[in-house]
Image (tube, rainbow, N blue to C red; front, side):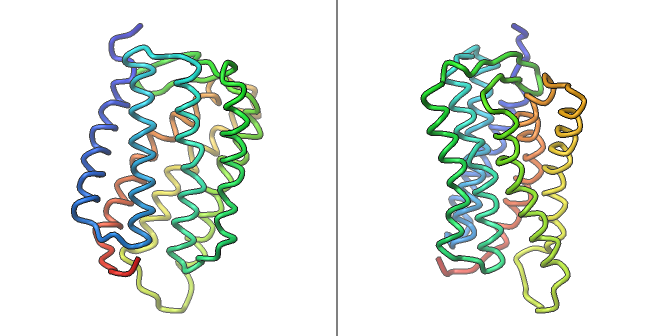
Length: 224
């Protein structure tokens, strides 16, 4: 095992922990900021788990499953945040978590099928069941969130947001572009790289994390 495997995950996890502590101390605890804190917590959790897998060598099926439990909730939670940002707070919106819950429950009974295939300095590669179906439900909320941001950037209501929506748009592009490349690679039958996309995407998500932290510290609304 390469002594440097997982070192990028450790570095990002340390930074995200610092961000998390700052948000818990300095950010107003309103509805939007609480969701941001939850997203940062999941990002920190995944990078920590990946370091345990690749850096320390805890590359068991259960650890791989835990990593997927963590990142499976990231896209719907992000969409949940974007919906709230634009005032869409219907109880029906919580249904976006159902696919993630279904995958977590299904995967919990077949944990032995998870496998850590490869670890590198930058990312990890996994084998896991229902990869294509999982990818569809994983990336769809990211695309929907991006479309909502672009749509609201050009509305004429004159609403004020804590930060300009273009920053959220660019941050989502940092998530969508790797995902798009992943689907292109899938069409070329480059499955080994595709099975690394969730890990790679979580590295790009650090850029999104920076924008979210900026958003949360700028969002001074008192309401919960």
